Image 1 (tube, rainbow, N blue to C red):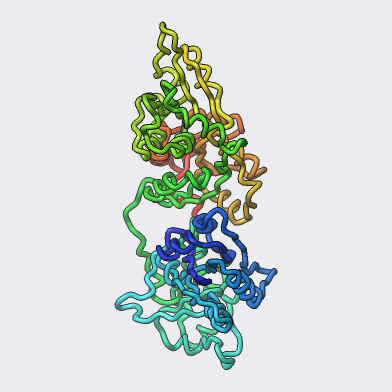
Image 2 (image 1 turned 90 degrees about the vertical axis):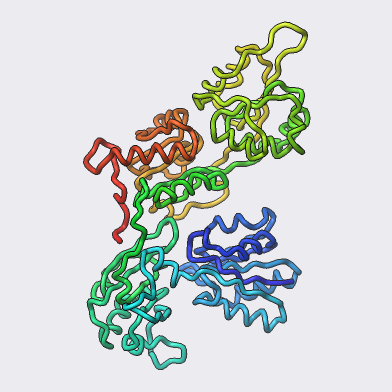
Length: 511
């Protein structure tokens, strides 16, 4: 039995260490903090037990209870990952958990994480040390009280010490912290930057001074940086087409990585609000497995989504099981899914829609005793276009469900912070009619951001039926095409343009 105290990093799941990801992949039990990004939990095996041991404001959880849970699962011989925000040993009470494990004789390993004390300032363009401005940095908790108590923060000494002061968990006491520092000699005009949820998709920052710190209205968690370096803004001057634009991605988390990456590469601040999840067919995939086993009996296999291509091809031992069957892909994204399995699409229509695919497909062979056969692995709910269109061309079409699109409402609750982030965003993206439908159900009365961008005309039609005004429809129905179309739209828009226009940076908290 071994317990791993793993630092989850400051917010962005990409800042988890490789060692941390490796251990999560082997975990049988994951005990996680409240602020850990949910995407990190998906790195654990599907059967792993996930336990929220976070300390929620107003609902405190005693540290002794957390220690007892860790020991309980470790003593059952399980591989336990204790996933802690930031670094376990930087105000994470990881030291107390390590002491409890040592007393119990349970072996453990500490896996350091990127602490928000340094990552949050960096993401706001502030180096905590800088030649000529600060050669030292002090990290403290934001507790105030009698400085003579062992372990207490001596604010007067910190004021005299100079250098950069980084305060964690200090927003509740920010006015008193500023007062004590000023009383001890720090100038009231000392630069300050407050970074809320640093490195996350909902990051916001406010620059002020010690005199103005009390007026900063950002909720926890925040990192407060005090000192001359707080006046610096060293964020990259290279501006992508979406720089400063906050974009909501509604796609299923497992399928959103390419779109999220391309949006971030273009400079966007991405807010992930997956409203759908991809699930097995209702029969558990038995019909799909049966058709995959006789794939070589078909003339064509037609795919209208990357999900269908991935689920079908993953059932094959290798490409030889396809026999002489040719493959059709509705568009470039689906063709890339085939290519990932070392299979090249024989047909990709110029018009990346179901209608375009039907038009591009040849007619069924005539004459002879054999009827041309097409296999169509598809979603449970699909536009009734491809199968009827191919039948009109003489093909015998076998439809089989490869996956279902389901709402996330049954699997998780959506927090107030997530909905607040959506309401302050500039753009929302939809990549399928189901993302439109389930967003409308999930958001209720919440209005979408000013710009609605859809991956293609079918999704755009669904958005209009749901009452949304569609501003952007990608010509190429892929993540790359959607980002390109959105960038072109924003380049042509301004705050004073026609309805739906938005300028990069609108709605972003001041920095």
